[in-house]
Image (tube, rainbow, N blue to C red):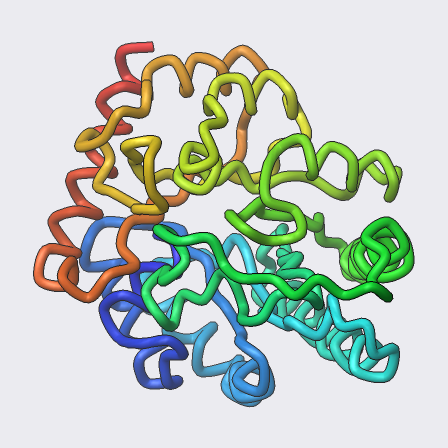
Length: 296
């Protein structure tokens, strides 16, 4: 169960009581594994309550498999802010090691010339349907930013993850610095570490007209985790699996071809009108994929 469930059912950002409730939700719906986020200052609250979270997971038979410190300043052009975010990311790695997640995730956020954050789940994917505006800054140099900020920051995150016995995964997200498989491939080549891999997020890639099977063929054994939700290949919707246009049998066959043995997280939701149907959407999506897995 992906953390989008908790965000959709409760809010962005959930309180600790809601975090604990989300663990119960996962167990109630028949999930054994889930991910967890720590967003900005809330990361420190998660750290303070780590024992309670771990205890609730053990009580409900839930294993945390990916911890996501959400720290936009990892991509700040202000070096002091970036250093603070990297210190917080180290705390995120400590939490990942404490929860024995195997994976820790870093996001790549957006360019400093965006007028507003282009991917903002707190506003229900407001830019899923409209391109965000950008400034044209005569002083901005994209490739300088790419090398000195993005690559440098992710390389340091990767080192921190490896020091804590964790793999680092990156999720390409629409409108962000690393938005698709091609951009992720470039980043991974620049960092040059097999400890760095991909979160294959089907809905984000489909919204960019990237065929999920092609993405699997490109990334192969560098896929560390899969976020599964359906798509109409037109917008950023994270739909119930089986209700969109994704070829799930083909995608699972491609993952099997490349000997994928990681987790597939159900990543449905993101809009308030889905809340009354959220449980059934997660349960149906889980069953849909399990049935195809039995067939192939």
